[in-house]
Image 1: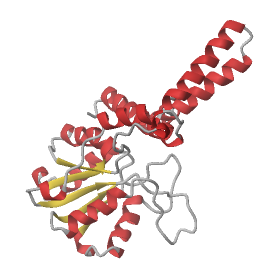
Image 2 (image 1 turned 180 degrees about the horizontal axis):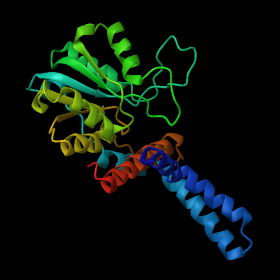
Image 3 (image 1 turned 90 degrees about the vertical axis):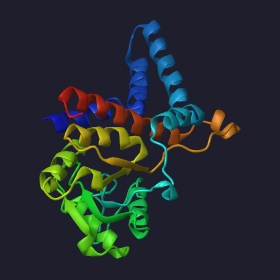
Amino acid sequence: MFFFLSKTLNYMTMPLVIVCGCFVLSLFLKAKNWKTRFFKIGLVSLLFFSNDFITNEVVQWWEVAPTPFVAIQKRYDYGILLTGIGKSEMEPGDRVYFSRGADRVTHTLQLYKLGLIKKILVSGGNGKLSAVNRQEADAIAEVLVLMGVVSSDILIENKSRNTHESAVEVIKLYRDTIKPEQCLLITSAFHCRRSKACFEKQGWNVDIFSTDFLSHRRKFTPDVLIIPSVEALNHWHILVREWTGILAYKLMGYI
């Protein structure tokens, strides 16, 4: 039930859904003052959420900063790669499809090639409400092998549906064979705080490596300051979904 409700709450709190809701109310409400209010709220919200400069400032504040490879002094036995970056519904099913966030895989590969991690533990099953033919961890493991990772250096946890379950399942499977100080948790920069908190809640204080950055270098050009940006609106959707997830996790005691 929590899985279904959390997904539903994510959709309902998306900025574009709220903006559209305001415009729809402004069309159908009979009271003129309320029609005007909701139209103004919708318009102001749309301009705010589509402003690239404002969005980038918020994203930079929230994301965990990148760590240069040369700054990593420790060598880890395992890199825990969290999934949630694949497109499971795409056809034909004889290949792997990535959405944004493929940096999680490519940067994990770099860590492996540089000898900063010895093995890769891919964690994540199906995060959708509907069933899929292939679990995402299995698909990403196939890609890693194609990229040159030795198959014996890949471990798979493919039962979890979200970050909390990833932490629970990974620790359940490897509590007796892997120590948390041996692990480097790899995920998107906007997702690092929740991910690390989930593992810490289960008693694993792992180091974190951030990838897949939404933010960019601060700019003061007209296209950033004035022109509405669809990408900025999408970034707000990602942030709000993450913040909603954190709130839900706190209420459930997952973090």
